[in-house]
Image (cartoon, rainbow, N blue to C red; front, side, top):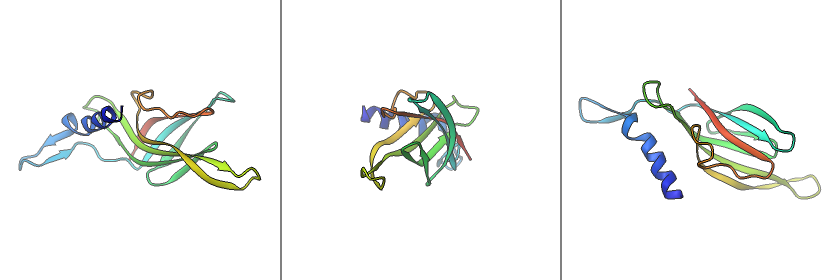
Length: 134
């Protein structure tokens, strides 16, 4: 599974996204984004919320702390795809209301076109990628 995700991510960044330059150098045809648009679902209340996670910053969704490390959106002339590398921690308390170090429950690539490919597995929350903004 991990090998297929690495292969998928490398394919997303390579073949159609690379443009041939006159001097033989290759360059990506899109630039990394500065923020990821995510949609979160609270399974208990059945409410969804869209929120923005700036790259390199941590945002909160319920008991989750989400850090977007990277995102990229293919340009319009290529097949549509948005992908992001996210790290998600489940914040916990020590039983007396004092926040404890959370447990990392997800670290990997998420793809907008295939949210089930590498999904966050949590009993209360679902999070998936919607867009990447520059």
